[in-house]
Length: 91
Image (tube, rainbow, N blue to C red; front, side):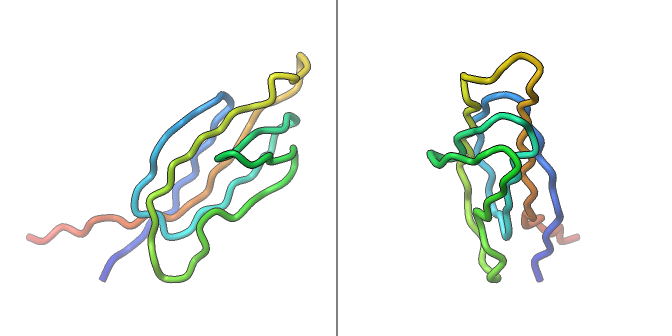
């Protein structure tokens, strides 16, 4: 039986990363600045489901780019919450 563990990834800057064996994933733009997430605009205060909890898993390439029109004092912040399959150890 495979087990998964919740993970929270927070970024306040542009980032590009690959995450493997994801069972669920939701992205929240909790900052004040619009961002582009994997090519789609994610407005400030909005969220998007990337991987639906359907019993399967996926490898996800994450590419976050914040709007360059951000005003001074505005916060850039994306929270990515996902569950990832943890490899089991056999003794």
